[in-house]
Length: 260
Image (cartoon, rainbow, N blue to C red):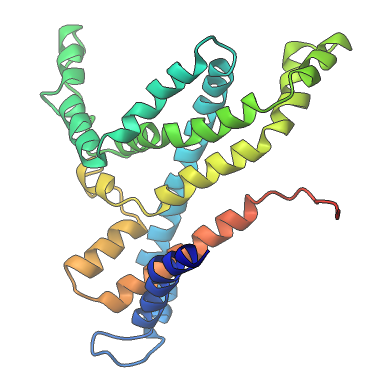
């Protein structure tokens, strides 16, 4: 218990506290609330906030729409653990390496454009677009949506879908009214695992979006590494933490547990 508490204090509570203190200081280390005032008064920061939420929402919807059918199929096939391992394998590769792999695929002289030229369409501007950013972000986050949904699917008691079919339910009705409600916990966990990290993505906005995609993660990087305005960078970080907390609260398990 003590090592766990120590870990939480040193690597969660203390960094958040330091970031909160930094957000209440200006570049001259004077205490102020100006950073928060500037954030909420600035149209640029509010636009970045909207972009972060919008892109995170899109990536979450795309990954969920792909992951649920895929997880459902994986839970029904033989050797499902082997196929699940193939889904998880890309997470073992460094994010930077995956980003550069997509740069090689989507660049003007990349594999995709070479194929488009071969079939007569010609090279297209695929890299440094909103679409390429959403595509790559969705690919990277996909395993984190599939895994919790798969786990919730394999935990469903097989007798429940069988009973629904015996009572005359179609496969679609069984999925919609029996299986899906029983796996909402996995869906919520997947949404949290995808939406929250996507809110703060900044490396992909640089390498894949080419700075055309501007999010709060990008702003934090700018303030810490370029403008050296750590107070404003910490302020945006605190706002992101609050947004993540709201996301976790909204997607929490609302099931009322009876008292023993």
